[in-house]
Amino acid sequence: MAALSSQRKKMVGTGILFMLPALAFIAFAIFIPTIWNVVLSFQEWDGFLHREWVGFHNYKEALLEENVRKSLFNSIYLAVAMTFAALVIGTGLAGFIYRLGRREGAIYRLILFMPVMLPVAIIGLLFTFMYNPEMGLINQLLRTIGLGSWAQAWLENPDTVLLSIIIVGIWRLTGLTMMLVFAAMQNIPVSLFESSKLEGASYARQFFSIVLPLIKPIVQLSAIFTLVLAFKSYDLVFVMTEGGPGILSRTIPLQMIDTAFTYSEFGYSAAMGFLLTIAVMLIILITSRILRGTSYEY
Amino acid sequence: MNIRPGLTANLAAHPISRTVVVLFIVLTIYPVLFVLNTSFKSTAEFFVNVWGLPKNVHAINYPKAWLDAHIGEYFLNSSIVVGISVLFIVIFGAMAGYALARLHVPFASGIMFLILSTTMLPSESAIMPLYIMMSRLHMIGELHSLIIPYIGWGLPMTVFIFRSFFRTLPEELLEAARVDGCNETKTFYRITVPLMLPAIATCAIFNFVSFWGELLWGSIALSTSPLKTIPMGVIAFKSQFATDWGPLSAAICLVLIPLVAMFLFVQKYFVQGLTGGAVKG
Image 1 (cartoon, each protein chain N blue to C red):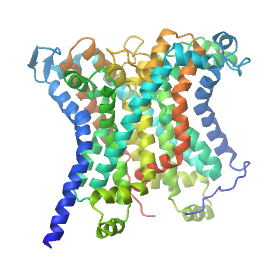
Image 2: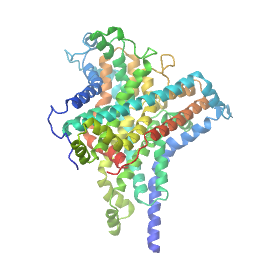
Image 3: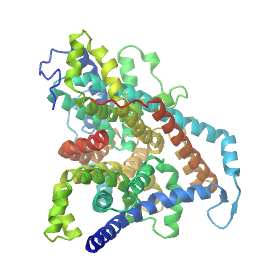
Image 4: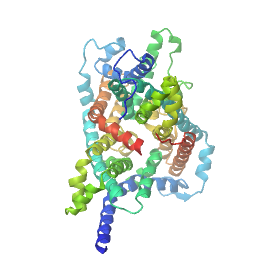
């Protein structure tokens, strides 16, 4: 018995040793900066000598400043709109692909999943090509089919800039939901489809009445994944519009980087970062509440 | 497994499903094919022939981007940064995942939860304190100033994936090795690692994909240095020669080629790893 417990102790010791490098790197790159960000948000600091505690002053200022409010709104609006559309389209596509042949479907899934793994900055560049006012594909297409009057500077027009960015986000993120939902559909027993078919249910009816309730936990999971990805807006917005025209498409990460590195107001920038963190947590919480479903045994 | 309806390879079946899916396939792949197509046109030809295939294949765009726009140099930088990062992420991630799954570390679930919950945080809001921290430590402006944070950012998901894989490993196998006199380290490298190759492939591609195109931290950490990674190089190229569409497209293709090649090569593992971990929980 004594030998066993000493063997176990040795195992635990090895385990802690095995975890140390990973924990050290995670602490350095994530834990410490995150905590420091919270601390900084209660200070006023110019990056050098001047540093003082100012309580919630930075937060008050941030919530009162028009630019920050607009950025926070954009961050949330872009992420929620992208996620909602990507979830609906991705789930629908999974349902359609489920009907098709296995080999054929595998190729489709591979192509649809591809954008998820492309670098966001490169996706932004691809779409500045698509949206380019003169040579861009979208305007060329509109002119070709005789809707030339609809052609416009998509990313410079205040009315279309956010929608244009959202469409890119949907293009990028739909494949993730499609892949996860399709994988979940694989686990639904075929007998459920067969018995309901005998009772005269169409595939559409089956999809809404059988598939959707069963895969709800996966939709919830993929909503969270998609939200997390969609909230990382810096690369995409920076490459496509740099937050313009004016500040119309600016999101919190762009506003933060500007505040910290152009104006050296580090505490203020940190407060914006923490506001974004709170907003992300709230949205994730609300989303998972909305999509919370019963797990069925099948 | 079960037999799905619609296993038939009959292309006439389910016309609506197929039409919708093919429409989205076209929308998905067209921007990429467009850039690939443009990369083989001279800029002059591009302006008169936006849609069609190139009439003269203008492959000179590639050497032009590689040399004149220094994409070659940046390609090498990115390969070094991402290669070293992925190597350490996989090694440290496998070790931590193994420890958390198998070595009876106290509070294993709590530690895993804490690590994993960081992936939900908007990482962009911790960039600024990290920059200040690293510049205080004089760790800014070299390639290692990218490698160290990348390792830290890649680890949480990697530890989670490895932990899930190690938990599916039969305990008896490890017990047998221990009874035969293997110590923990030897058990790990001799028995466990070879069985875990699919997990290693998943994590390697997953992290390669995340960091190959990373722009924000790269441009902040290397802002005072002439060093650039490949996405930074392409963005700089774009702001300098915005109308030189041919070489710019070639530069974009040079970023995408290793990603697509790697993805096609290990996509089976990748998708299995992602959905396996996610769906089975």
